[in-house]
Length: 135
Image (cartoon, rainbow, N blue to C red; front, side, top):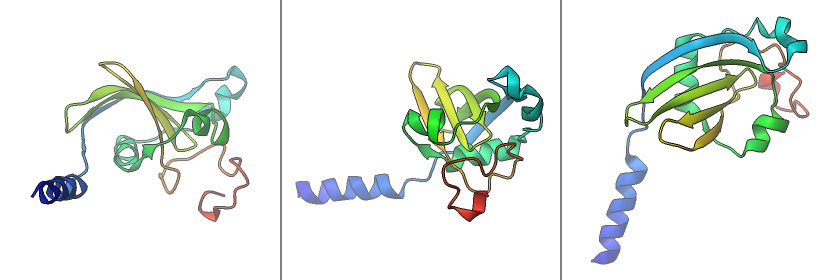
């Protein structure tokens, strides 16, 4: 009986609908973390629908992915409220990575690198570029 309850709880968790983005603001676009790339980063202007789609599809990754493997100085930033009421400030980098700083503490690093729809000034410069969809 206990095993059946555990399996039912697991199945309910697995089939739960993904959370959506309830509200999103963009306060900055085309910004750069490096003064030497400020001009090229001005071309990074993701739209609200692109940013929402990114946060609905992205998955957690270790910080190494943002700082090394897919590093880009180009970013946009703003705030986000998810349908489950979690909220925070985000910074989205042109390479398909982001960090959310939660209002109640903590951070999460995210990745979704395929077909995000925005212009990435550093496309093709990540890793060995063996995934042809990003070259």
